[in-house]
Amino acid sequence: MSEQKGPQPRPAPGPVGWLFILAGRIVGLVTGALLLRLVVELLGLYFCWPQDSAQHIFQVGAQEHTELALRLQPHPAGKEMLVQLENALEGVLYLRQQIHLFFLKDLLDTLAYTLTSSLLRLVWLVAILPLLCLCILTGLVDGLVQRDLRRFGTGLESTFIHRYTRRIGSSVATTLLRFWLAQPFCLPATLILLPAATGFGAIIWAVACSFKRWL
Image 1: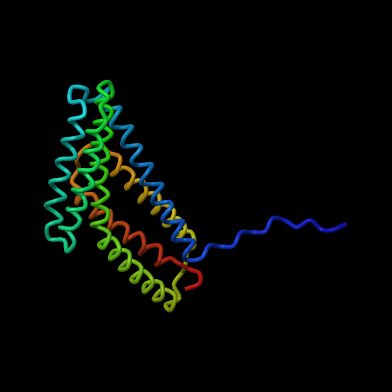
Image 2 (image 1 turned 135 degrees about the horizontal axis):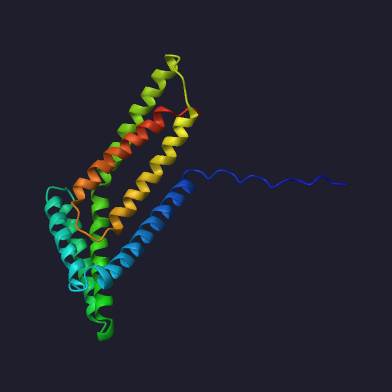
């Protein structure tokens, strides 16, 4: 009688596989947040600000556009980003003007203005990406240095702290990103994204500092 072999464990993905997995998760997170934003805007259209109709989201987008244009002026690629953004916004609004369904006017306006506002917030994420990478690199390097100092100083290691910090940190980061993309008001992006980037760097520091295996 031949022995039954159990299910073979799947091999761990390589660096390229991890990049594809990370890209898929980011795309899924952004897509889910945009759909949630649309649902929130539609609920607000009929229950929270029916007297403003789609003008509410239009005003939010206008305020966000003004803030973004002001903040991107000193950016090295700010002018090019603004040009591409303007082209994308004009394309969305032009497509909306080509659809003439009067009984769905508020719905289509809300959809178009939500897409334009979401594009503005995605540009914010792209613009702040260098700062986020700097915070991650700083936290990683300093965390690994602290880890080596602890090891050479016969300090105690805790796998629980590493796993708990990594789990809580990823949950907080995804929740904060989803909240900022889905919330229907004009909140100052710098007051949210700058502390978020610094906090994410601190999470990377805590994870690298308590890392126990391989390195």
